[in-house]
Amino acid sequence: LAKTTQPISMDSYEGQEVNITCSHNNIATNDYITWYQQFPSQGPRFIIQGYKTKVTNEVASLFIPADRKSSTLSLPRVSLSDTAVYYCLVGDMWGGKLIFGQGTELSVKP
Amino acid sequence: NAGVTQTPKFRVLKTGQSMTLLCAQDMNHEYMYWYRQDPGMGLRLIHYSVGEGTTAKGEVPDGYNVSRLKKQNFLLGLESAAPSQTSVYFCASIHATGLDSPLHFGNGTRLTVT
Image (cartoon, rainbow over all chains, first blue to last red; front, side, top):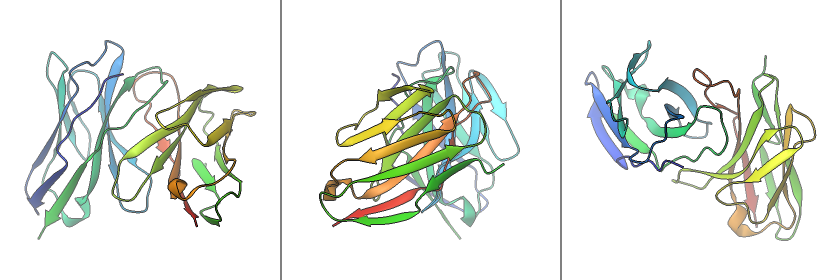
């Protein structure tokens, strides 16, 4: 199982771009990378998922280098409502045991 | 389409009591998971199931049992509750077809053991 390492916390200001990097040195060939967002008292919700290179959707971008040993979640122009905990999950694309890391607590200030 | 539904939402137990948490999903997902989240901490995997009738241990399985008799339901049981099991319990499910198949979470069950 690929273990993930993220910064415990990050601070930002409204309107800035935020990049959160996750390390997963022992990622396996069948593993994909998924990022989740969790607000207090709620279950995590899906943000973005990728296998390699760059993925972009309406809320974020995910950058994955060729060696896939890390990934970076990019949130453009954050707002106060982006204050949350962000988890990087590396798991087999066919399911099985899915272990979360500690997550990154992002605090966005006015 | 309700997604993942957890019942109950809240529960208070006394030490030694037993209870069952129910997770139901209506997305025809093959895999289901139970996580616990202690205050200020991340999610820890308790047990999971890759199909009807099959279960497997996660990171912190001791003190819990699970059953998956029907594909849409995943039950988490506490045989003899302890204060250390005070936590928020999240159920999740996933469609095992590869990419574009993220976990879907319920809203959690807040359990307090006194």
